[in-house]
Length: 242
Image (cartoon, rainbow, N blue to C red; front, side, top):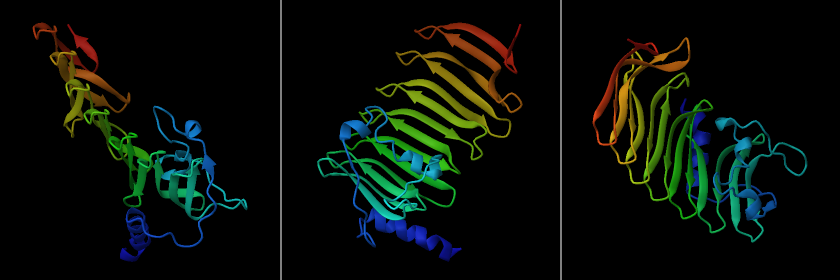
C-alpha cells in the first residue's frame, strides 16, 4: 500500500511547505473581494468543486477541459485569493486567502476517506476545524472570535447517530451538553443551562434507530435559575410515565 499513498503524501508536503509549483500555472481569474467573501460564511465558492465534502461541480480550463494541476486565482488588487491542486476538475488540496494575506480556509486529504478543513477569521484566529469522513462531517469544532469554543459535534463514521453535541457561550459557560454515556445501548446524558451557568434541566436520552430520533428515557429533573429543584419526571421511550 505504500506506493499508493506516495503521490498524496508528496502533494501534501509540497503544498504545506510552499514548494514551487510544477508545470505552467494557468493565468489566474481575478475577483472583487466584496463579491466573493460572505461576512458570515467566508469564501465558499470553491466548496462545490470539492467532492470530498459533498461538492458536485467540475472546474474547466479555458479550453473547456477539466482543470488539472495547480491553479491560483487573484483579487482585483493582485493579492492571492485561492491556490489549489485539481484532478479532473475536482479540488484535492487548497487554501483560500483574505485580501490581507491571511488564510481564510485550508483543506487537506488525510487518507482515502478522511479529510480536514480549517476555517479562519480575517485576523488569523481559528473559526472552525472540521474533519470529514466519506463525504460527511465526522467532527466539527466552532470557535468565537475570542478563541472560546462555541460548538462541538461528533458523529459516528456511518453518520447514523451523534456521539456528542455541545454548545457554549462566549465566556465559556455551557449552554447545552449532549453526549453518549453508553455506546452499546446508545444512551446519552443531556444537560441544559441558564445564562448564569446554573443547570436548567438534566436527564438521559436513548437513540431509537427505528424512529431515527433521540428520546427521553429515564429520570429527568428541572431547576430554577437559582438551582432549586422544580420537577422530577420518569420517561420511557419518549413518553412520560405517570
